[in-house]
Length: 300
Length: 255
Image (cartoon, rainbow over all chains, first blue to last red; front, side, top):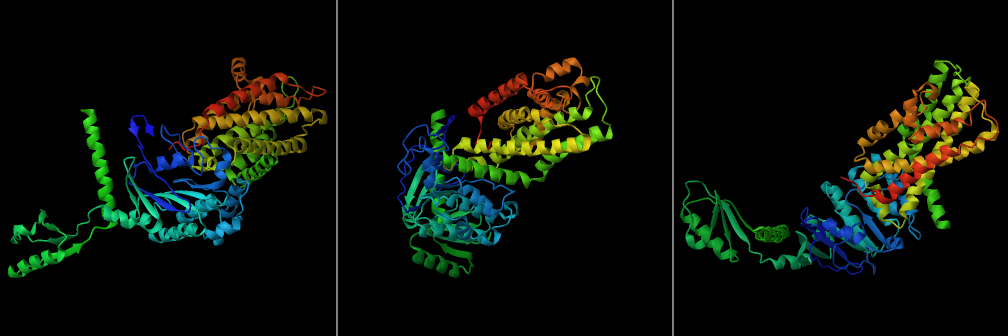
C-alpha cells in the first residue's frame, strides 16, 4: 500500500484463524490503521492479496458486512439519539441480526445509560456504545481500532473485560493498539509492526524470548566516588552506572564487596529484567532505524 | 426490495427523530419562515403590488420556498458534513446497508419536513392573512414541492462535498443561500428587484422554485397551474447535483 512516495504497508503477511484474538501492535504511524482499513474494505491496496472470511474486501458484496463488526478509531454517535436508539438504528442495517438491542446494551454495560442521549455519555461510555453498534449485527469477525486510546486506567480495565467477553462469544477479533500491556493482556497472538513491516509475531512469552533478554544492574554514584573495577564491565551515563550481565548474582556480589571495601553507598541499586515494553521498543526502534538507513542509502 | 423499503422507512424515521430533537434546525426550518411572514405582512401591512396582487400571496409562496430550501439544502449540507466529519458516514459504509439507501433516506426525510412546513405556512397564510389555497392548484403545488425537495436535497448533498469541516458548514451554506434568497423573490417581491439582478437570479434554481410556488397563489390565475419551465430548470439543477454526488461524494472524514 503506497501513499504517493510513502510505502505505508510493505510486504506485510499475516494470518488470523477463526476464534482467535490477535493484536496488531505498533507505534503511531506504523501502518496499523492502513492495514486494518484494507481488511475492512475501506481502502484499496496497491498490490498483494487479501482474503477476509473467504472474500476479497476490495470486491466483496454488501452482504459480506453482515458478518463483520467494525469499531473505528474515531466515530461519534448521533448526539440527538439515546444509546438504545443508536444501537436500534444500527441494527436495522443488518438483514439477519439475531441480537436484541437490549441484550447488546447489557453486554457492554450501558443498561443504566440506555435512555441517555449519547452526547451526555462519558468518553468511555461512548466507546462502549461504538462496540455495541459493531456487535448488534452479531458478526463473526470484529475489528477494533485502538479501542482504549485516551482511556483512564479504570475505563481501560472495563474495556478489556468487554473484549475478553467477545472471546466467550466465540468471535474472531483483530485489534490494533500501541500499548504493549494491552496486547499482552488480551491477545492470543501479537503481531508487532513497525514502518509497515511485521518485525515480530507470536505469543507474549515467545516475543520476550525473541530478544536476548539481558538483565541489568544499575546504581547512581556521587561525583567524587571512585569508579568500580574495569572487569565488572560497567557503562556510565553521567552519574548513572549500568552493568548488563546474565550473571547477576556473581556480579552483584563482586560489586557490593568492592563497595563495602571502599565504604561506599550504591544509591538506587537495582537489578532489573527487561519488560515486554522494552522488548517492544527494541523491536520497533531497530525496524525504524533500518528503514531510515535504507532511505539514506536510496537518496545517495 | 421489501427489505430495502423497510430499512428506508426505519432510517427516515430516525432521521426525522434526529431533526425533531435538534432545536436549531427545527427553528430555522419551521418557525423562522413563519416569523418572517408575520413581520413582512403583519408589521409592514398587507399592501397590494402594482399589479394588484396582495403582498401576502407573494410572501406565502416566497417563504414556502425558503422552508423547502432550508429543509433540504441547508439541513443536508450541515448534517451530512457533521456526519462525515464525525465518522458516522464511514461507519455506515462498514455495514450491509446500501449507501444509496442511506442517502435516499436523507432526501425522503427532507421531503417530509418540507411538506410539514408547507402545511403550517399554508395554514398561517390562510387563517391570518386570508391567502386562498385553491383546491385545484394543490396538485401543482405538490409536484413543485416534490421536484423542489428532491432537487434541493441533491444540492445539499453536493454542497457537503466542498465544505471542509463541521464548523464551516452553516457559514458556507448561508454565504451561498442568503444572497440567493434576496435576489430570488423570497424576501423581496420580484417586481421590486432591478431587472438585471432578477435575470441573474434566473440562472439559479431558488427563483424558479419561488415562482413555481407562486402560481398556486396567484389571485388572477384560474385552473391548474403548470409551471413546466420552472420544474425543468429546478430538475436540471437537481440532476447536475446528483451527478456531482455520484462522482465526488465523500464518506470518510477529511480530518
